[in-house]
Image (cartoon, rainbow, N blue to C red; front, side, top):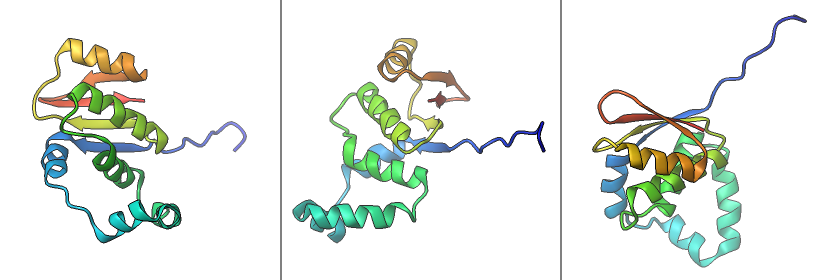
Length: 129
């Protein structure tokens, strides 16, 4: 196999921003989230134990619920989402939006986090990190 090279599998995620907006506005704290916020050491140990059992896409969703806000602009949230995805090793995000992003929004997001955004079908965007 000297001439062959093994291609590693790309880590991709699908993120439905419409679902995120609905979920984030009605989010209630779980017992473990409350415990982690009041006892930081427990939170660190818990996060490491749970991190290994979840996919990068699941961790992205959870982190997005903690970090993004429906009070922020969509561009700001999407820039933060891309930064979270990079930390999880995600290389591509299929972003489903409730509406199409205009060219200026796309350029702002691309410039804000050094990514490439390709317009997909309807209100879907492929973000390559």
